[in-house]
Length: 220
Image (cartoon, rainbow, N blue to C red; front, side):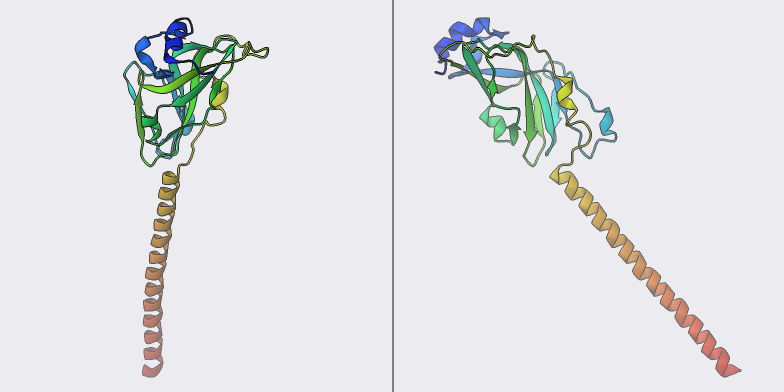
């Protein structure tokens, strides 16, 4: 059974830090973008290997380009009781701009720490966000009994560096690939144009040489 807004108000004071009752949205709690952000580099980055985790100040903006992934941590520390399960998503007004949650949709019983959201910009334009912006949703649902198998890892804080290894380096977006294909097409066009000029010059030289040769033969 999902927790109602009344249950959230009663129980979340001990489960979410910092907690503010004003951030209860119907039957969910809204979580904010926290202090660590990683955005995969696109074709506009000079050296993709130098891209690393950023630590924006509160209110500082950052951008997720089209076709790129990002890892975002929550500002809040979250605890899920052993007799409950957490479900996560992104607020509709952000999803409608093309930001997709690809990190999964549940939080295990016994979890404790900041949540890390893996997101993907599936839209055609950059998505601008800022630290402190409330774009995440967390629901709690009760289990019929405490779970024997639970998340027993120590409190998580920040982005796990292990998850970055699979997305480090340049990731080509459709827009980036289109630009490279266009540049290649322009290059081929320039080469073909130069070849036509070369052929024309060769024809002129050959014609001049043939004229000179014929003139020499008949004049002799």
